[in-house]
Every structure is written in C-alpha cells, then in structure tokens.
Amino acid sequence: MNTLFLQFLLILFFLSVVFLHTAKRNYWTIFLYGLQSLIVTILLVLSFLETGAIAALLMAGLILVVKVIIAPLFFFRLMKKYSLKFLVSTYINIPLTFIIITILTVVAHSSVFLPLTTIVSTNHFYLSVILATLFISLFLIINRKGVLSQITGVLSLENSIVAFAFFSWLEQSLALQIGIIFDIFVWIIITTIFMSMLYKHFKSFDVTRMEELKD
Image 1 (cartoon, rainbow, N blue to C red):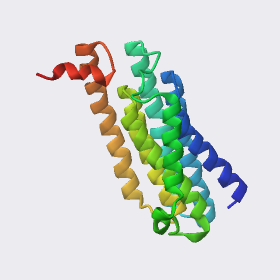
Image 2: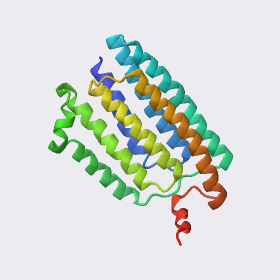
Image 3: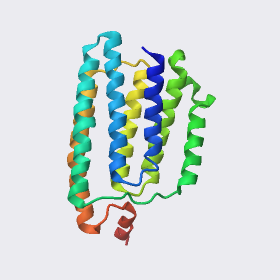
Image 4: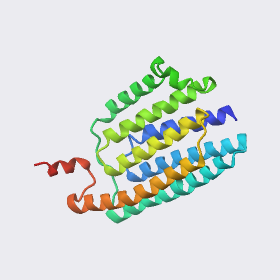
C-alpha cells in the first residue's frame, strides 16, 4: 500500500476525532463523523485491493451505505425535526480539553501500550495514533453534555476499533461486520425514541437537564 496515502488518511482520521471536541455546530459534528466513516471505507477498499478478499469489499460497501450515508441522514433528520443548530457546552473548557487530548496522545505512544501497538511492528506508529483516537473518542463521550455529541462519540469509538483492527492485520469476518451494522440500525431506532422522549420532557438535548429526575 502507498505509505504516504495511508499517513494522509491517518492524519485526517486523527484530526476528525480531535475537532469533534471543538465543533460548535451539529452540522460539523455529523460531517466529521461521516469523514471518519469514509476513511474506514477507503481502508477496507485498500485491503481488498491488496488481498483480493471479497469480504473486505462487502464490508466497505456496508459501511459506506450505513455509516457514511444513512447515519448522517438520520442525524440531519433529527436536526430538522427538533431545529437543532448548536451543540451544548462541554464539562471542560477548550484549553483544558486540548491539554487532556495531548496527554491521551502521549500515553497512547508510551511504553505502557507498547505490547498492543507493536502487534505489527511495521505499523507501530499507525497503531499508536489509532489508539490515541480511541482514547480521545472515549473522552468525547465523557466531556460532551449533548446527547447527539455523545452518540457521535460512541460511533467514533467504533470507527477507531475498526481502524485499529485494519492496521493490526486482524481478520474481520463479514458476519461480525454485518452484526455491527445491524447493531447500528437498532441503535438508530432506539436513539430516535430516546431523543424524542428526552426532548418532549426537557425541551433540550443537554443531558445535565436530566438531573431534574433526582429526588
């Protein structure tokens, strides 16, 4: 595979996760998630071109349809239905957020995770960066107050896992990917119901409003 092209994709993937923490509009959150999913699709297509594995091509097609097309359209539909324009605030301010992201990136590149990032020694740098995106995605779920942002964080985490498997040369069965796609479909249905109920009761998607449920 073309090393420079892989590095370019990796940089885009990493930056998309980082910028999810700074996005102020739901539109950019959805765009960045779509970009992530498109990069994962391209990685699987590259895997097909390298190995000739039909399963990789089928998985790429499934991810393209569900994650790059259907999921963003679902989010845009929610934005239109509930007139969502801006994201709610974070628990931690932007400067401190970047400090934590930097720390997570350094930790991912540390010797602590060396046994994990050297599964394929030639891909050590790639695996370290993807591991950092995994940590940053987890932090996104914790740091954002908005339901839509938290959902995007979970989906971003799943994309990071798929990318990590790709650079680890771990075989991903078609059945497993179909199961993941099915989970996303079910999650979309559950999310629609949950967000509808949340907005109906609180007139907001800020999860801190749910503190009102306490006795």
